[in-house]
Image (cartoon, rainbow, N blue to C red; front, top):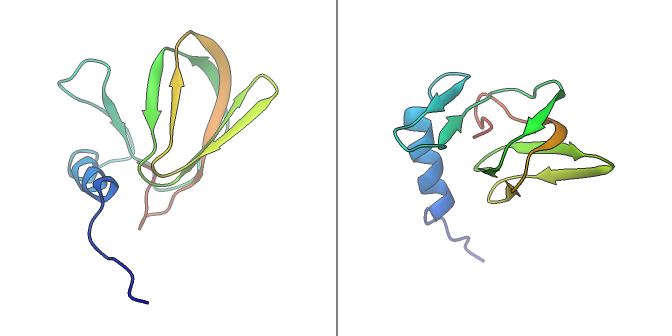
Length: 101
């Protein structure tokens, strides 16, 4: 069986983000509340407060700890936060060839 190799919408989004997020840092955009993040390696767990937001993973995997719940999410998945909440999290899968985006 032949696999369909046509680019997906996710592939197009990855291409766009890679053109703008060239370094290992958060990049602000001209759209309020929209930023891009690139990481080529897993990160240590950090604690903080999540603000109302929507985080869409294009590539790589992330783990978030909310109280007693652990959320793992990856390409094409997202996390929506509607109120301030304490959390910790880290990037669990990212490489130079396939960075977390």
